[in-house]
Image (cartoon, rainbow, N blue to C red; front, side, top):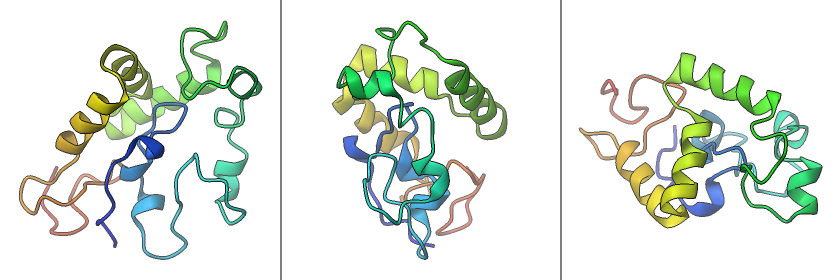
Length: 138
């Protein structure tokens, strides 16, 4: 499993997901390049995501879902957030609030620290409770 990726602002999805820590981005085969990637070989589920393809986002040239949207947080974002909080201990809404408060640069810096394996210092995966590189529990 490739864990050499680094967290960048381009890998933070409109919903607040850090694509750099997603299993689809970290894998070697059929690697996803993140929600903001426009390539044709992007996974179907990502191409059809109602959040990243949101008309309000596109029309208003917004980078992230925010409280500027009358539907924020929309049902899709709330459901996604609930699932990730329950299964993986990460909140997209919390991420979006942190981006709004701190700015994207500080958010990315904090994410680099938060998602680094304490043992081998490689990038952790949000979808696993252990480091893909060394097996250390996260």
